[in-house]
Length: 289
Ligand code: C2E
Ligand code: MG
Ligand code: MG
Ligand code: MG
Image (cartoon, rainbow, N blue to C red; front, side):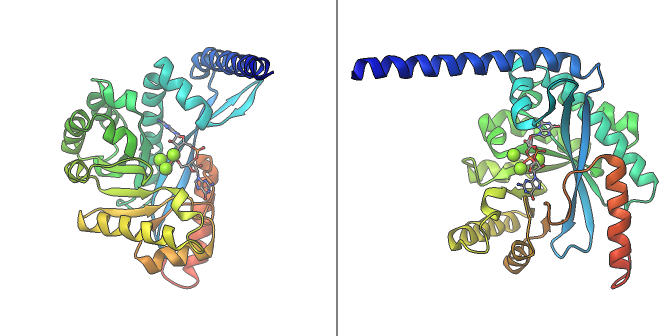
């Protein structure tokens, strides 16, 4: 009987794996068309000072709306884009689109110290053309380098730290800013972390979720903040959904926050409307940003 069960389990897993790889293959084929068919879009999520009074930037987040399959989550299609190499043309499009959008916003009066954050994946860091691409995009869009913030996850940063540090050094020479995303979920070497000279650490949302109740999470966040500040980095908390989380983070000394409490990621026009409404709300109590 045990043997039969083992065989059934094996068959079950094989069937599941086949279904999974079939889905990935069809996603890969669909993703190949997505760029040309205008199915990819960017949403923008505001980033605020921890008191919620100053807009410090926006993060560009990729969205895919397939005509038949509907909205597909980045958590599902980014890995497909990475394994197929499609992340290179898609990532270049993201960079161009986000930079052009930010430059348009600056010209419409967004403060010059606001940043546009763009996520980069490992394949992009391993691509020899990354620095040229960033330089070209800055030149073509006219966006000041200091307004562009490139996010790499902690695991990408630590994958081949020596190589990544070299790329990061060249990026920094261009004048762009650097943020380490999902911080706390990987295994950072502190000596490498120091060499990255990133501007910002993004505290992963898994530490923010239960912050008000969980004293371990409070300790972890406190330690991350201490690390960030002693290395002259700013810290931003991701996934801030409640006032309680915001005030706990403020008490702990976190600099900035991003999350549904302020806004979900929004299409460009809705983002502009959000900024106007938010400014109007704050104009009542203080001078607008
Ligand atoms: P990430 O860069 O860590 O982005 C934060 C994720 O948290 C986003 O998910 C965002 O929508 C979500 N989020 C923001 N505020 C809240 C909140 O208050 N609560 C909760 N529960 N979630 C919140 P999203 O947009 O699904 O993106 C997932 C991941 O996909 C991103 O994680 C990033 O790693 C990747 N990704 C998205 N766009 C791009 C891109 O253009 N290029 C690359 N390479 N990766 C991307
Ligand atoms: Mg990010
Ligand atoms: Mg993150
Ligand atoms: Mg993430």
